Image (cartoon, rainbow, N blue to C red):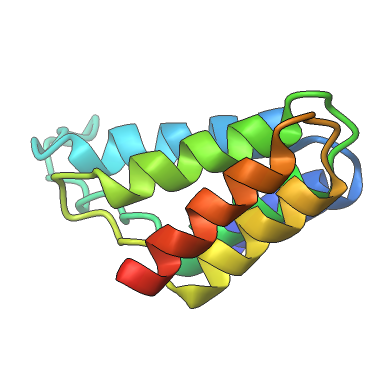
Length: 126
């Protein structure tokens, strides 16, 4: 997990939120794959590691720092995915909501105030 988070943080500092989220999605897919693979010598490989809330929050942070015009929208969409997950993946925490609010604050979305109020309402209801 630490290695994945390190790479995601590097992308965040290099305006690479799209790549950071791509890594998160890859990790989610690996975590949702419950089957063991066999290595070349026939032994079973370890189960994939599920992404932690820290990794999700690092991706939300990357969207907050991104110059992408859709960054705040992408942060809200990731928050939606986190809230609506039916898998073993983590639910958002207070930091997740704060990172999305920060992304909305820095975004170019003309409806950002209304969207921020919606995110705040969801935080208070959680």
